[in-house]
Image 1: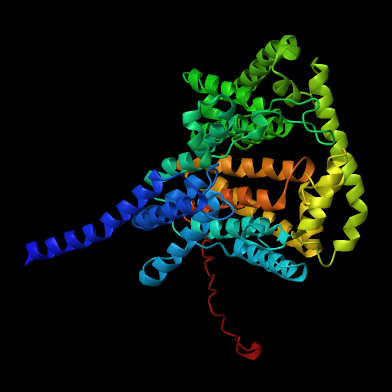
Image 2: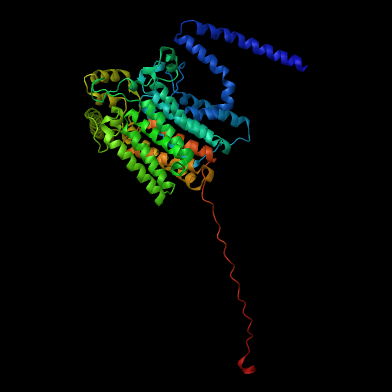
Length: 516
């Protein structure tokens, strides 16, 4: 009976697999078009469903900082966007089936998150809806709403279950080292033709070819800026800090770790982004402070590293690649004129755009502008942009290069209040896990907290975008809650008070005066 059942199961499998294999083989053999690629993609998605049911949680952490896209879906959505919704749906279904499964929830984060989600939905409803041009809509900007929804769904899916302690290092590696995939798109200018199919999944980083300063015609004073290389190096630096902490990098006997970190920090300058250098510097400084390393031996070590770095950089500053010089342009160094002008042009362009945007803020205090964009207005703005006036086009598409402006203009004062509330709640959760979490997870919890602080400072002061940075903030919170099983709080120590002995006085019998 068992043999007959196994034979029947094998026949059913062959009956399903063989036709699918023939269809996929034919689609691969014929010249590729959108239909054939989509068909192959859907077939592969069906075949990998069992893998998703089992490994959706680690795949979510892997995809969060990955540069991959799902090329066979309309609009080519990012891998993390799809995995956020898929993982949340699977987690909900598993929760309904398995009664023992419980979501790890933090109420003081869910409340501002739901409030912010409500503000986004109401604003979208009042300002033209969520239009996806890739699906034939007349409006553009729906992808930004999808980013916001995916960030929230991904956070809920991350916190759906606790990561076992023995797998924490593995998940942390998935989360941070996935940024190494950004380097793949940077290699496009030097890759042989037989590797071009790789860039269907990992999009090409066009800044590797040329990058013109904003406000100037494309190609004028172009600087080659390897954005993907910078992101990959920054992710590797964060992983080292999460794994060892600043203390583990500076302690004696681990010189290779420190050398590797310094090399990666230098490679992070290849993109020419001053923001990356400032972000990494603040992360290291905050980690140094919250790891309580203000001791003579560590201060001397940091001072020696600073002196050594200055001795190497100052004489060679104007001989470094232009992108690196651009990243160092805010420091008092002797760098090339081309790099300094490129950086200064960007600063002036941003300041001018912010000055133009300030009078617009009162118009959107109650009801924000939303993220929907009219396709005709965008085409007209692109025509103006070709004349060198790029501020109007950038303002129209909502790329304000400012974190606070990217919140208050699209979603008004209610969106700003919800965002501040959410940031305070996330900061509180990360701090409590850093302060009272498992000592074995000290370096990870500290890195998550200080990286959050550094990102918040950069978002407010230097550069930020609400619909893109929300995923970074919620990703850090989701990882922290997942590895700690929630939020740790200080243990309550009940004060033991000694009982006060009762002094019982002997009863005094009253004797009348006349009886004495």
